[in-house]
Image (cartoon, rainbow, N blue to C red; front, top):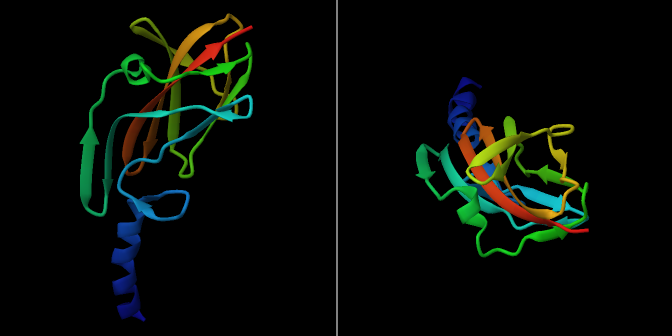
Length: 147
């Protein structure tokens, strides 16, 4: 019996450092969130991250969210629409920030994964930062609030 656990323990430790995609295959990079508003999925762009799994580590540094979303069509949404963020592998902590020029403002999340778009029409850029036991990652997306 002890021999069984001797072989099982390394497998458990290896698998603890991995995430899986929707099909259940192991990933060596952080999961990409699904962000929805008005029953439509928003385009989310992977930002900087550091991730460690299977005894390997990888870090990637990207531009700031305004540069990441440049050239991508933002989702058009109504003022005050709810935005929901979900991961197939949930982070231990998650923070969302609204980018205004070179400054960022923390966004209050309801139930840890939902927030409401501004009432004022305009173009808004958001960033998400998540932390897992394997590392951390950031993401960016844009929304155009229209009347």
